[in-house]
Amino acid sequence: MSDKIKMTVENGIATISVNRPEALNALSKDLIDEMDAMLEQIKRDPSIRVLVFCSEKNFAAGADIKAMAVCDPEGARAFVFSDTYNKIEALGIPSVAVIEGYAFGGGLELALTCDLRIASRDATLGLTELNLGIIPGAGGTVRLPRLIGEAKAKEMIFMSRIVSGEEAERIGLVNVAVAPEELRAVATKWAEKLKTRSAVALRAAKESIENGIRDTDYVSAIDREAEIWSSLFSSYDQKEGMAAFIEKRKPKFENR
Ligand code: CAA
Image (cartoon, rainbow, N blue to C red; front, side):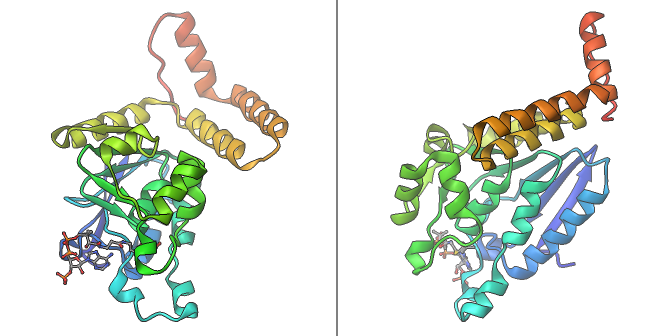
C-alpha cells in the first residue's frame, strides 16, 4: 500500500482520501487498484454503513495524464478505471462524494459513481477530456447524461465546460453546494444521518432506484419495486420501524 491513498473507518463510516497534492490528486492506475482493494474490504465488513470520498484541497484533477500520454489503445484499455468505479455504484451501502477544489475528468467520474454529492460552492467540476483529444473513459458519457440530461451533458463534454459548485447544484450535478468552511460539517451530518437509517431498507431503496434507471420497461421496474418492497416485510427493521411509529417512539434499527 502506498501513502497516496488511504481509508479510515470510524464508527461505521469509511472515508477514502487521495493524497497526491503535487499532482492535484490526479488518479493513477496504481491508486485505483489500491482503491479497488479498499472496496473489497468494505464489501466484507458489515459494520461499514457509509462510504465517503473526501480529499484535501482537491477532489481529483482527473486521471494521471502523464502516465496515460504514452498509451496505445491496448495500454489505454488496461488503464480504464471502470471496473473499480462500477464496484462503487454496486455497493449495498450509500456513498457520498465530498468535493472541494478540482473535480475534473476521472475525478468527476469518481464522484458520479457515488449516490450523493456535496460540493463546496467554489469547487470546479468538469469532464474536460476533449481538451486532451479524448473522451471521458470512466463512465462519464453514460452517467452524466442520466444525471443532468443529454443537452447539459453534451454541453459540458463537447465544450469541456467547467462549472462551479454553485452551478453544479443548479443543474443537479451535485445535491447541494455549501460554503467552503461548512463542507466537512455538512458531509459528517449527512453520513451520520445515513447511518441511522435501516441498512436493509437503504440497500433495498438503492437497488430499486438503480433498477428503475436501468430497466427501460417502466411497468417492470415498478413491479420490481413491489417485489423488493414486499420482501422487506420479513425484516426485523420493518417490524421495529412500524412498532416504533405506533408506540410513538424512535425506532432502533438492527439492520436485519
Ligand atoms: N494528471 C497528471 N498531472 C496533473 C494532472 C493530471 N490530471 N492535473 C494536474 N497535474 C499536475 C500538473 O502537471 C502539475 O505538475 P508539475 O508541477 O509537475 O508540472 C501539477 O499537477 C499542478 O498543476 P498545474 O500547474 O497545471 O496547476 P494549475 O492550478 O495551473 O491548473 C488544472 C490546475 C486546471 C486542474 C490543470 O492542472 C489541469 O487542467 N489539469 C488537467 C485536468 C484534466 O484534463 N483532467 C482530465 C484528465 S483525463 C481523464 O481523466 C481520463 C478519464 O476519463 C479517466
